Length: 146
Image (cartoon, rainbow, N blue to C red; front, side, top):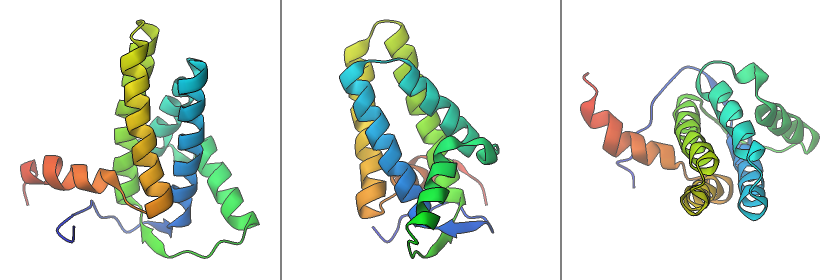
């Protein structure tokens, strides 16, 4: 696994932030799978969009994670922000598909994708493992020049 590459940027933040956001995503998506309330993936779609496409100051999950991190006085290492932006874009694609499939009545497929995203978010939260970096390494990096 040491051959895994991630996008890079000069921006950095605590590694606790994406882990807390992962926890919130797990809770919300499990709630969606149980209740089938369409507004849960709709909310996540907007939040992933904000974090993935330069509007992170409006992200409710990011604000909650920052507040929880400060209130709990969690210690963490500074990490590069770019891989988490890429992961948020993947989350945006997943939640778009989850919501669209739900709205068109494909609840089994929608739930299946939600469970896959729960696993990805749980890996981030529990093991600090970024599936986005794996996707970047094998599906994006080979096609980028330079």
